[in-house]
Image (tube, rainbow, N blue to C red; front, side):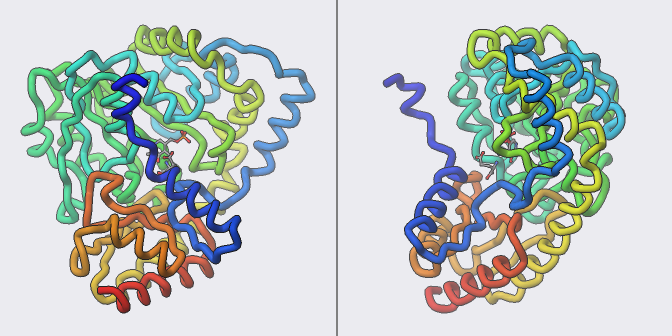
Length: 387
Ligand code: PMP
Ligand code: GLU
């Protein structure tokens, strides 16, 4: 095997979720808070669009970047929700946003190019950047700034080799949402440089407090340098359908990733493409509102219960469906903490080490309230009995 593949780590979030599914299948009473996946079904209007696509015989190869009505629907969404104007040739549909990131890094990162990644980060970024030959420049954030990178930190991390900054808003794993003012301050630091911004806006629709702002909407300068990455996995519970996309001012960059896609995966699933239109054009808005309401209720309950546990604490996340729980009063070794919790209490969480931030664990509240209450009760028992 190549050194490149040997140095790639498996996705820890997927590994833990798979392990908890296997243990559950063996009959163990596992409560899983590891999955980055809504527990809701895909909205009926989207399923109906998929069934119609099959019956209409949309079952053949399509354009590599997606059928025109899909790219128009993405452009329509970006205009309506984010105030961004993209033409269909500035947009490409991929097999999930993870695939978008892979294509983007493959097309832009030369060997040794530096990519600034604020930590805690989503597991996949550093692995893919390294896989594509880039050098990860990790910038550790903390609770004082709600885990958001500051302009000073960004400035200090920039070198002549800096190629890209990855921003995630709302964040996985912390749920932090950057305000317009915060993004504007970061944008100022980038002015006059040729640094690209990969803006992962996957949890946009799950913004509970504050207002969501797209990086590309900050200024014309930011529009030019930002690659907007989004999808439907989280907002309309379509994780298994595999749909993500990128949009950027530079149509040549879109073309470059299209070339790569033409030689690797080709177009994304044709049926998913037609289903995705119904997820983008407003048809599923009532479903999105219903899920968002449920997530807010779960978040509030989970935050309250965790903060009642001696030795644990958590900031209230403004978006996404994760709590990033501080364990530092009891231990900095969250890997051992998470292993023990699974062994002794059958509760699956993801240790902060996966996100470049030991001393924390990630708890997904994309599950029902009873499970949340029972799971947090077990976490409390675990802390009392072991620390
Ligand atoms: N970005 C973030 C921040 C995520 O949490 C995820 C979820 N796995 C993705 C991208 C990729 O999602 P998908 O590949 O399902 O579109
Ligand atoms: N993004 C989700 C998570 O963070 C799904 C798992 C993955 O793709 O790594 O759990």
